[in-house]
Each structure stands twice: as C-alpha cells, then as structure tokens.
View (cartoon, rainbow, N blue to C red):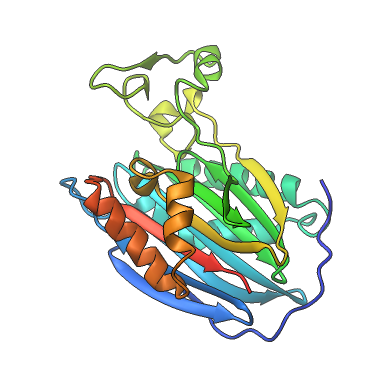
Length: 281
C-alpha cells in the first residue's frame, strides 16, 4: 500500500470550500492551483451537489482536500459528507502509514453515522469522489458511486476512480437479496430505484448496497498536468480524454472547470454538473 513520505512544499496560500448551489471559485497553494464550477441541472428539484476544494495544514503536512458529493432524494446527506468525511479520514490513526485502510474505514464509519442520524437526514443518499493531495506530491483518490476522478499525465487521461454501476456489481446486489432492473426507464437500477450500486445513506436500500470505497493512489511528478473531479452530469456526456483535452489547454483551472460544465450543458446534460480542476506545476 505504501505510506506517505513527501517533502514539504511552500507555505499555505489559500483555500475554499462551499455549500451546494451553483457557484464558481479558485484557489492556489504554491505551485498547485484549483478551480471549481457548479451548475444546477434541468431536473425539477433543488441543487443536490456539494463540493470541497481547499488546502489545510495538518500534523506538519500540507493537505489538499477535494471532493464532489452528488446527492439524491435531497441534499442532506451530501451536506453531511461535506462537513464530516474528510475530518473522519484524517482522524484515523493509520492515515499516514496506511492511507488505503484509513480511508476505507472512515468511509464506512461515516456511512454508519449517516444511517444512525436517520430520520434527521431523511431517506436520501449521495455518491462521493474524494482526492487527498499530500505535500503536492502524493495523491489518494477514493469513491463510491459514479462521480469520477481523472488524472492527466503526458496529456493522457487516467481514470482514478471506478464507476459503481448496478449491472457491473449485479452479483453483489443479488447476494444481498436485491435485484437489478431496467424498469422503469432504460437505466439499470438497484431494486428499480437507484442507478448506482454503492452510496452513502439510502437507508431503505442499504441492505442491498455497499458503501466501501475503491481507493487508488498516484505520485504527482513533472509529467502530471491536471486532476478533474466531476459528478456524472459531466461524465454522462463526455469521455475522460475529451474532458482532459478541453481542460488542459486552459491555464486558469477555474475557467477550465467552467468550460467543462458549459460543454456538458451544450451536450444537453440534464443532471446537476459539478466540476473541480486541479492544476499541478
């Protein structure tokens, strides 16, 4: 798995995080810059996406925290994740020595906390894709659901997360007593309701869903250009490489994030679109 051992980078320069709703912003930390853009979709419900984009100093290291939380059946669960998930991850004792295990444990612990707060948080749920950048040189990505992280190295798109789709994980769902159906509509759904096979919350479906994340890591070197985190409102209409090709040409990451969201709208994405672009070096 490998522990975290990076040299320190320059002093913390700025950071942002925000609640849901349409919005945009930018920040920087030494040679790392980031920007985000959130656009409400055409569905007849309030914006359900939340995000985090900020740097913090923690136990002598500079830590970049980036996340997209794509809610369903309300925004209470993604709002809870925005407040608690990263703090739960960093609290795990083995985070510095075994980040993979620490992140997985924190995801599960956070999901149990969400379920225990029901009915305060309602019956909804949320996907999550999180990225943790340590001292600008080590990246850890985790996800549940179909929000996605894509890294660009040498101009080539590298998918860092795994889309958790009901058809792909049909065996796990059926082993838990659930089923996958394309009715109603033409999208595979768990018990005909939810279009992802892993999620936070969703108490009514939880016995048939998983909330354990897939965790990957990468070294950030001179050949690594950008990281894109986005909800499925972007990925439904754009390939990984198309997103990289568009964003890599725009030096300002906030403008790149906005351009990605605009292009998704031009391609008639109906969903909420949330996008973070992190530019290295």
